[in-house]
Image (tube, rainbow over all chains, first blue to last red; front, top):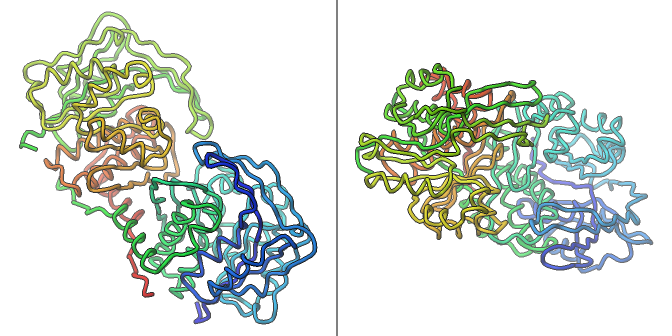
Length: 311
Length: 311
């Protein structure tokens, strides 16, 4: 990669109502770009959000992004309401159902990059319509790295544009069920091979509390999730993972195999902070020391002396 | 531990009928002790099985155990039929249902240790009635290490005896659903703390293709499962894990934190061989070289350079 380590994310800045074992929490700041940008902001001071919000988004949230050094000039406020997701978690904090999804101003989202955004180094295409993802790729001036997320809704509903997006993407970050559906293959190793043949040389498969798998030409890397005693809200864990992952790549400025592996650990670290609180609260007031301590916790979680078998 | 690294397993030697995406396979050698002892036999030449079989168990299978150096003098052949499990896997090779369970001679199993077995160093109490597990503990002369497995059926049905067994057990090896039911707690970190307070200082929680977690006074260690392209039959994976785990402890002869971590990796290695074939076939013809190569594959799967964040 060049020395331009700026990071741009296109996605949602939304409001969530989350029900579950801790009771109903209304009007929480949510959306893929919110989690992603907040997590990434600890690793690079050049993160920009491209998103649309409605009149009901409290300005405080935008000011929080500004306070983290995040460029919010690409967040357009329109008349109407924010994207609003209403979800309910079962007592296991894993199983969840969508109670309601109001698209609001997100229904007519047309991401538009200002000139200052077009020379970005790293782009993350959050989970939006693949035709809009393509549109963002077209607007950017040859970024060093394009990463993307997607979901079952687009895999089933807009496979044509998704295939075109994937052909331009370097890094795809999806969950295991999405990988299986995209490849039409249950076995994750075989699914990964099929998906990497569609475009992305690097594939990250997120598996919730089972961690995440990285597939590259260098082979497979398994990053565990940190086992946590207190999980309050898994919403945004995957986006926080992606933000930590991409933020670390922007920080390191290269795509060496060991850099991508450390980006996986950094993604897991940021996801672990996210799920301990509602909304982005777990990511709000971190210090470099807290992040480094949790990296050390991953070292202890994963390290073993390979005591050679002498037989 | 003392220098007595002999390993004794009490459990089932059974016949399985397995249906699934590869068609119905009948009368396969199965049972927890079969997988456990075969996996462990690569790490110590002193493995003994305590089990009961019926008239329908082909002598060839017993001779295979003998050929692996396994002591089969504790396998009692009785009139009647073997324990026989009939199961069906869904196309994902994860979801399974029990079609039939015939206890056969296993219904009256009363494990009896010969004098030669009583001085064993390491005991593994396979998944049988906790009252029989206790009986085995009583017969053994102060073994260095007692490990055990159990299942939901005993947790719900014989919790009293199970509590007595757990009080004598050093290492408990169970799966995540069993841990949750035993602790009545969904969060695995909290469940592990509760379970370790019941007796076992070391707890291994197996999570299928999500790997396994180790809980000790040294903290938590996460061993991934090796992502495999070809999985044919997950039956016995957990028992093969336990056999590799305990076999490695017998081989190493100590319970140092790094030894137990390497035992976890060894367990994952043996489970990965198991699921590639039906029955114990994936464990039949291994060489030390094949086992070492797969340990190296785990090294590559898990290792990362902790490139320190400089901020």
